Length: 342
Image 1: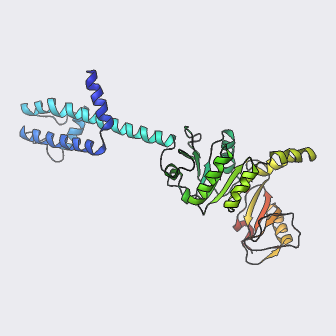
Image 2: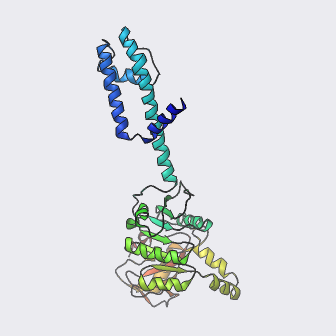
Image 3: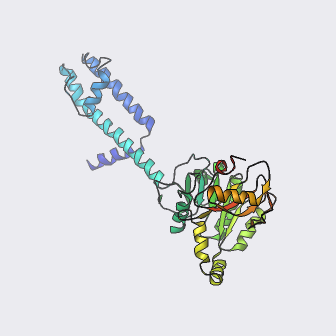
């Protein structure tokens, strides 16, 4: 009996969909022919057969239809019910296995994602990554974006209801990294625990997803400078812990100020916006407009032809189409809010 159970379990586990459908077809056809030979015309009637055999095979047995001949009763007792019950159990078990396997693959990040214009976070740093996700999903961010967390370690999705999740062999392994659909990502954030891994991952992402906006965090700014030599379009985020320590020593409260400016979940925070009007105008005009109409404070401008931000620019300096404005506000503003009247 134990051997029979093991054989049955192995059959259930290794039977594919086509084999299961073949067995089902054989069962229905053979039952139909046997009942026809037994003279059970009422049971094999077109309107009755499928309904009756499903009710009988599942042992529900409403009793509204039943065999009337002796041979028909033997066919039902020794063929239709035993084989149908086994087949019914097989199908239910296969469905359960499929759903369980699909759910497990989803939780462990083994599914292929079809996201587009999404944000991919590459790397897992525990509470820091969770905080990063919280900031990206903050209510003050007008443009909501689908987030995909990509890790290279054995773990399950830490936020299954908030982010999609993929697990890969390594962040430069082409086949498994395809699960994150990097080619169609809008933004990619690379934040791994090791700078050398961040460097190789950034080079890989630049090749696979050249049109996305990529940011990479480095603890050693020299490694970040090395990346910029090869990929100048990637935005490198260096560690500023030492600079912040010195600044807070000279100007107490600076660390709190910077933290609040970067925190999109509480108080006034810093955002950016591209200047879209066709006509250039003085910084003073835009500054006054932002302050009077949106209670926002402009703090800097980066011109299209420059790679540095002009903080606290002269009021007479010109702002042109394509320049990036940096401002402080309680929530993110849109181009339609700021420039629809221009």
